[in-house]
Image (cartoon, rainbow, N blue to C red):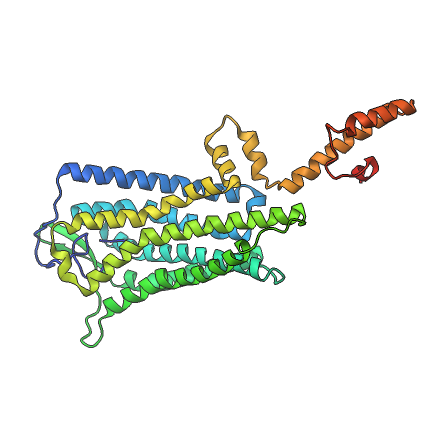
Length: 392
């Protein structure tokens, strides 16, 4: 049984085997099972912990609750849920080729991964379109938090509808010596429902959203990187442009990682639908386990990408795991921009200037000396103004 495509095949690899036959030709030696188990369990642990921390970072810090980050929460939830509820079970079924978990979980196991992958990739698509609107059409109104929640709800409704056939036709069968979980597709002479469904799913959860995101990020990238920052631009403009570039760069890496991880998986199952004879070989079990691990590993890379490419998420992970320096991480998570910090520093220096001037007021010479001491060459004015301007 595989997480997305569970056709009428009766074993764990998607290889066509006679369902009336209890013979299992894909039994592996213990050392291979052990290596695969370590690889899968490590991947699931990193994925679940990393995505749960991402959700906490965004929801526990009010200033992190932006439109983009709401979609990142949805993405993290879908990936963590798929890792926790499907990956290990799927691995056990792929290795043993026997279903131990009953008909109810069989239905859920065939149904949920398609919904989760749909929600994941369309959350990325929504982020791409949001970035496109913010950068290409900055004067148009952005999504509010309520509208963002509505979009996320619509994404999940469409995801559940797309996955429903896998739930409806899922079933278990008792073979000689083992139980299998499979999808009993209706048999029509004129229409092959299984092939049509799998091709549509592949188009809808892989190729179509990747095309949309490719077009959006290409346009955004040309806009942000085509020309250099003007030399006479304000510091605020430069900061905003650099911040936009960082966000777009991070999301492009996320999308490319998803595309690379899932491409072999979709190719594998499309070939299986149209060339089933290729999948009768004994080695195909190892190919399947490798392809599935690569696809499922896409759920663990996003938190790593956020940590490496975004200072706020890096501060959040440090706050979650490095209790030695929680204060610094917390300050970074408050989303205090460099402009804000510069303003705060200016106000603080202005306060010091006012104190020095007030203290030296009885002596005109002392006042001048006090002012010179604070505003001399070694301490230039952050905003280039005098004392009265700084106080404003």
